Length: 206
Image (cartoon, rainbow, N blue to C red; front, side, top):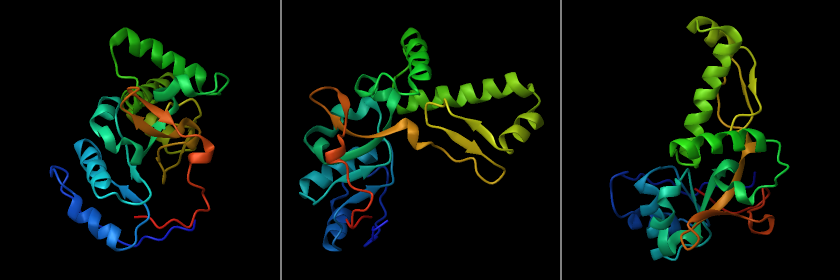
């Protein structure tokens, strides 16, 4: 897809400074960085990325609503995939996933569940299990048999899935958008098409 991995660095997820690793990526010619991490580590990576005035952007694997303010001044450098449910006010009201999104939001608000990637992921997992039980019964063997044989769910909040014996992958791209944490607004802001890196970009990444 026109991407070249120019360097890889290992980080300690509990460390509080990744500038050494980020500087090594910069010196290797990286024009963007992918941080395969979650939790506090993604904030640490973003802070180091901004402190070094790195080129391009930092792609983080995930981030929760509770972390938005923690990114601070480093937020504009961050790109993070978010499920549409987490940015519902910025999604087309006619989106095919809007009915299950609204269903989740209604339940989440009643039970004080975060309306973010993690809340939606847990809800989707529970729904897949309960829907499968409703279809094939509660026998574990029957459930796994269903999941291993072209199991499909196009109303999963994490995206349309198609499972086989060899692939229980997550997640369908139809449920995701690229976003930037916006501490001032206290939300994730969806990137507009003009701001989204092209699939044919020759940007070097790691």
